[in-house]
Image (cartoon, rainbow, N blue to C red; front, side):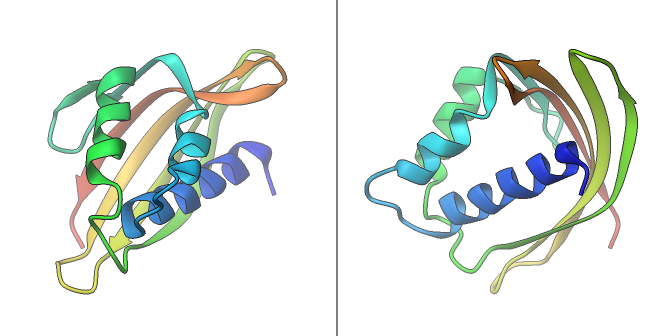
Length: 129
């Protein structure tokens, strides 16, 4: 498995856990947030712009609010990589027990920081199901 793709899979497992469970200690939320570069930016499918602090606030406020959430990832593409960065794309399906499913196309910039990967920029676009 490509290490960039594995990073996305691992992070989304934590996202699913954080949003789907109420982790009173916040350990999983902290593990998740440690993956994001302090200069992180994101364009959400709605067009909302997130910086690092807004992302932190989102996960703190939304923790445990989506019980039963499952996330499926597929169609990974390595767009570019060099010694400091990688750009990948993938599709993400979110399924909920009591809401309609969503599908999105994501483009992610990862940076190599201190011998680990960090999320630097993410752009998500909704796709029709």
